[in-house]
Structure formats: structure tokens, C-alpha cells
Amino acid sequence: MQIEDYFEFDPTGEIKIKGHRIWLEDVLYEHIFREMTPSELLIRFPTLTLEKIHACLLYYHANQARLDQYLADYLEYTRTNRVSSERENHEQLADLRQRMDAYRDQIRLVPA
Image (cartoon, rainbow, N blue to C red; front, side, top):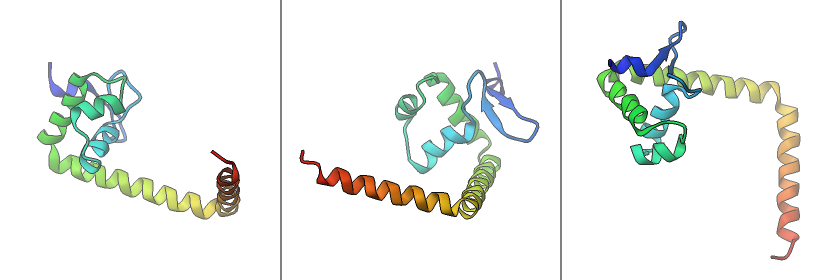
């Protein structure tokens, strides 16, 4: 079995873990930026096996330069979408934040 057999390569360049709705960047983000160990990743992604988690990490280390760029592109894509969404939905988000603050204030008034 080849390491690539663990993944589905989307025509757009995205990489999904075969048989799951989990993308490679999801696992790599948690491992690289949140410094999760394989055991912690197993808890974070309970539908994955330890074998598939290790396959993700091995694939990353075997293709690190390319996947670092892949992750950078993913993070920029999500940042751009978040900024755009916040701009387009400013009023709804402000209303939601106001309601959340009011709810927190209400909870503080309830005795424990």
C-alpha cells in the first residue's frame, strides 16, 4: 500500500482522508498549530484510526514544503472568507453579539 492510498485527491487540489469527511488540513492544523500529539488527534477525530492519523503525519513530512504552502493557502482562504462574511453580515453579527452579551449578563444574575 502506498501512503497516497489513504487520501482522496480532489481535482481542485484539496486532499481528503479516504472514507471520511475530514480533510488533511484539519488534521495538520491541529497537529502543527495546536501541537496535538497523535493520541490527542485520535480523541479530536474519533472516526479516524491511529493508522490514518500517522498516514497524515507521514504524508506531511514526506511533502512538507508543498503541504506548508497548501496550509498557508488554506489559512488565507479561510481568513478571506471570514473577513468577507463579517463585512457582509455585520448587522446580524452585531445583533447576535448583543444578544449573547445580554444572555451572559442574565446568567451572572442567577445564583449558583
